[in-house]
Figure (spheres, rainbow, N blue to C red):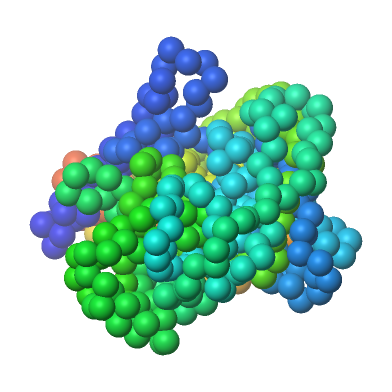
Length: 485
C-alpha cells in the first residue's frame, strides 16, 4: 500500500514538472517581440487566443468552377474545416456564403499566407508518365485526368498580410496550362488517406508517404515494373511536385520529398483531409483586429486569480488540513489545465476562459463531497485511516454522476457549436469538459494520495486539523476518542 502511494506521488511530481515546463518555456526568439511562439521539445506551445482577444485573418474564397451545387459547397466547407484543424488552428470559423463562396476566419495565425495555400489547394494528386517532356518542379501541366485545369493565379500585388483592417482585393485571373496531355498512371481518387504520414528520411529531408488502393495501385505497380530507370512525375493540383527516377517496382505506394518542413506539412494536410470538389480563388483577405483585446484578457486573468484565491481560502478555513491539501491539488490542477491548453492546442476565447474559471469551482466540488463524508466518519469515531478511505468510497458515486452529467452537457454544447458554426460555444464546452476531466484526476488521485501519506505519517492526527472539534464515542455517543492512523 505504501509503495503504491509513493509511486502515485512520483507520478504527480512528474506530471506537475512537465506542466510547469510547458507553461514557462521561453519564446522561440526572445529578441523578436513579434515572435510569440514558444517551443517545448520542438512543439509550438504558445498560448493561442481567439479572434475576439487577439484578432486574426478573414478570407473570402470564391468558387472558380462553374455551376457549383450546394452539396459541392457543403462538401468543400467540411474539407476546408478539416484542413484548418490539421494546421493546428482551433476555434476557426468556416461557413458558406451565398451560392459559391466560403468565409474562413483564422484566429492568431503566424503565417496566414501558408495557411491560405493549404486551404484553397484542390488536393488532386496524380502520378504521370512524363514521356519525353522535360518537366521542372512547380511547372503547370495538363494531364489525362485534368486536361483543362482551372488554376487560380497567385496574387502578387497584396504581399504579406498586415496587421491592419485594410481590405486586400485579389485578382480574379487564372493560369492556363499549355503543352501536351500527360498520361495518368495513378489517380488521387484511389488514395488511401489513412496511409498519408509525414516523416524525415535518412538525409534529413522531410517527406510525405502515401499509398494507393484499387486500380491505381495496380497501374502504378505495372508501370514502375516496366519503366525501371525512367522518370515519373508526381503532380498535385496540376503542378509538378517532384520528378523521381524509378528504381524498382512500387507496390502502390510512394512518397513526396519536399525542401522544407512547412511545405511537407502543407502537402500532408491537403492529402490527409481529401480533395476539394471545386476550385477556389481568394477573392478578398484581410486582417481582423480583436473585438475585445488585451484589457479583456487581463480582466479574465484577474477574475481567474480572484476565483482561485476565494475557493482556496474557503477550503482552507472550512476543512483545514484536507482543505490545504485540496488547495495544493487545485494549484496543480491549474498548471496541468493551462499546459494542456497550450499543448493540444486550444484557442482561448473569452467564452473559453469563462469555461476555465467555472471549472475552478467545479474542481473542488469532488473534494467538498469527500471531505464532508470524512468529517461525518470522524464524528462517528472511526479511525482516521478508515475515515479517509470511507470518505472517498462513499463520495465516489455522487462525484461520478455529477461529473458525468456535466460532461454530457459539454458534449451536447460542443456538438451544437460544431454543427451550427457557433465556435464560441465550442470553446466554452471544450474548456469546461477538459476542466472536469483534469479535476477528477486531481481529486481522486492527487488529493487522495496526499491524504494517505499524511495519515500514514502518524504525526497529524489531531481532530481539529480535520475540522472535527468533538468526535463522539460510537458506544456512548459522548467523549473524544483518540483518532488512530
